[in-house]
Image (cartoon, rainbow, N blue to C red; front, top):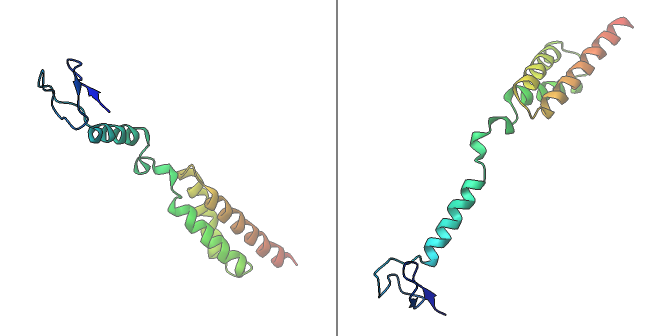
Length: 120
């Protein structure tokens, strides 16, 4: 299969890097593959630039404290309070706040369990 010079249009062999007529450098398939890769890399957003895609540390802490609160059935008041505080902060700091919301819900349920037990 033949290719043509990018400058003057003369027919060339596939493996020629320079035109025999005008001397212009020819684009090789390696260069076109590199150009394709560069274009693909420019289209893909870099994950490190989007900080909000990761769970916040407060959300993870709220989730862990919420689980501890549920497992201890509200016996300790500190995990519930910290879980509620960290859950609120985690929801405000990150767009991805699933763990923060779960931690907040678990902590509130445990805090309500303490109130219910104290009233009985």
